[in-house]
Length: 187
Image 1: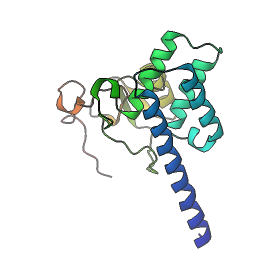
Image 2: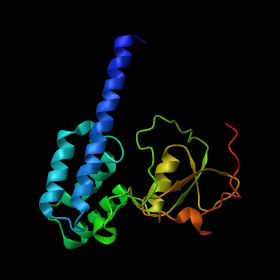
Image 3: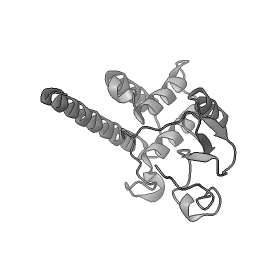
Image 4: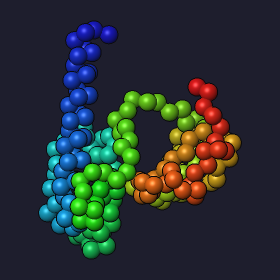
């Protein structure tokens, strides 16, 4: 790989990271008052349309998909507005109107990691609520990718997928944690 190519690739990745951070900043500002207005949803949709690279990776892809669903018929109902607000708050991990803090209340996750997962033949268990859709929809996606969807934690689980709507304190509870029964990773 040439040096010029490597530099260009690094610059592209840095620009995408900055744009993703900008998106999360926009969403944080939009949800800060605990309300979602139609103009805010429209503005966010326009921003994602103008920044297609960000809309193609998580969390931009998740936000874009949620917005497409809400805006599909040209009318945003109160139910859709409330649901979208909840999704956006979950993505940025803060509800300023409740806590008075801009600090995220969930663990930061590497959303732009280049880590590859080997899903084919892997046992995958889903828990929590997912921005993508229902647990069944996520399990179908897993199976289409060649994974084996498992409904409970057993020694056959290779990956545990935790939905975005999980309490930040889930690791301190007995429900949903089965680390003792998960096999240790050997590589």
